[in-house]
Length: 276
Ligand code: SF4
View (cartoon, helix red, strand yellow):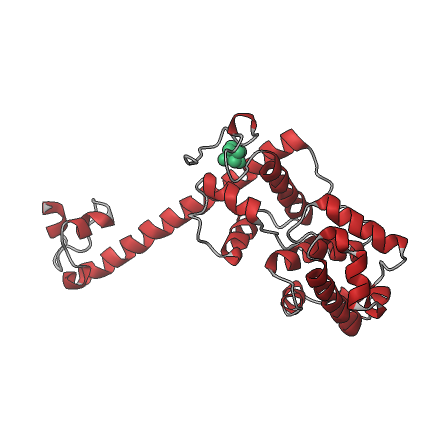
C-alpha cells in the first residue's frame, strides 16, 4: 500500500511499480491524485488496451486453429450445393428450419416444373409455389418469403446476378434484410454463397461451439459474433465460405445440443466448458 500512496503531485514522474488495479484495491480514487491522476489514467488505458489486444489475439489464434483442426478432419466442404447463384438464393430460404435433403426435394420439384428462374417464380402464384416447395416444410410461409425475395431481385436488379456487381456489400445486406422473411443468417448465406461477398455466416451451431469453448459468453448478438469472426480472420472469401461449412459439419455430427460427442470431435483438444 505504501507504494500506491507514494504517487503524489511531488513524485508523479516516477515509474508505477504496481498494476493499476492495485490502486483501486487499495481504496485510492484516481481523481484525487492530482497530476498522478494522468499517470493512473494512462496506466489504466494501457492495461486494458493490452488486455483487450491479448484477448483478441487469443481469439484470432484459436479461431484459425479451430479451422485447421476442422479442415484436417473434414477436408474442404465445397459449399454451397447449387448449380447457379439463383438456386443458392432459393436454397437459403428453403433451408430455414429444415434439413438439406428436404430442400433438395423442393428444388428438384422446381426444376422439374421449369420454375427455377427468377421470372418464373415471380409469375407463379404463391399457392402454386407453395405446392412445389412442399417437401421443405413450412411451405406457405416459405412461398411468401421466396416470392418477396424474387420480387426484390426482379424489381431492383431485373433478376440478373450480374446487376449486383458494383453494389456495396453493406447496401446489399441492408436491402436483403428489408425483404420479408430474410433474417441475418439468410442474408449472409445469400451474400457469401450466392453473391460471393465476404460476409461471415453465423448460425446456431456457431453459437454453440463458441460458447462451449468459452469464446463467447452466450448472450452476444448475431452481429457481435459475426464481427468476432470478421475482425479475427483474414478477409478471405474461400475462408469465410469453408469455415462456416466446417462449423455446420462439426455441429451436426458432434456438437449436438445434448450429450455432445467430444471424445471423437476434431475440436476436443481445445478447452471446453462442462456441458450438462
Ligand atoms: S463436441 Fe465437444 S469438442 Fe466438439 S465442438 Fe462441441 S464441445 Fe467442442
